[in-house]
Length: 287
Image (cartoon, rainbow, N blue to C red; front, side, top):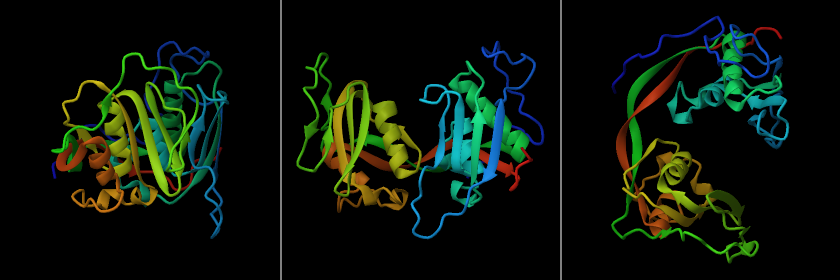
């Protein structure tokens, strides 16, 4: 494994992150902050109790642009949101942080989504004393390639007829074929991703990245835009990163990619940027 520290740890004070000319009136020489932010420990989940909402949501572009909420979120999870990380980039791993918090923050009027990310970074530094550094590390990942059996996706028509309405197929899925994006659905123990007029990268590479939990690079050489439908067992996603990609038994993510789309995930060592958390308080500074 190759390691080289590239960013000095930051601790104890607000991050030196500013956005020129904030539109909502904060002084230009002040770090971006939420108007108000309440942080409380999340009540422990009782056995058999539904998981409920988890993660960070709201803010600019949502139905509630003036409020940003994190529910049952660990510091590690909030760092993923604040810094735009993939879970595999985090060290220690995401699962190592079991302290969960509920955050309710008031977003200043006129703030942008990018400014809210900076506010979350500053909240982590001020309230949790988050300290971190970056490293370059070689890790096990995958290269997405065209399978020997050949590509099975269709090139998107330049001017497809408009969808007449929702489709229902034999697997129990009801959906409107997407255009210029992807849609996900679940039915009868299966997960389906449907894409319309999308390039392989970032859509399918991002999909494979999410489903395997490991970094995936595009080695297909495909430059066009495609329509596709990918259906696989919902149970195969959990622990997919430990699945042998040569095992085509069952409807795993690996098998579905090859059989349905003519794509294959080949194991490969990949150099990635790692976000190493050096310190984070278990109890946040008082509100």
